[in-house]
Image (cartoon, rainbow, N blue to C red; front, top):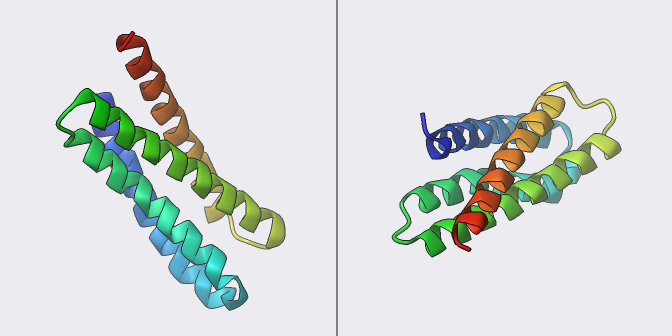
Length: 120
């Protein structure tokens, strides 16, 4: 299985987990609606950008879309950490999301580094 297909699968499953987390979280913490929406947008955007990268017409477009996915996963990690710090009673699903997000971030970073090295 290629690195791209592993990344596509992981980012899809991550987006699904973000949606499920959001639906439960927003019911319990309506006051944090805006933060939850930000998390939903950035967390689901990662996979969409990975898919766009896989369908890219050029290496430059591929790198650009993966770079956007990398920025989105970093933003997602920010929102997850913020929720963790401000809602200490949050369940363990958040911790699993953080672990998965970090794994996706490492794969994206590694792929982008390799892409830059190959373009030199």
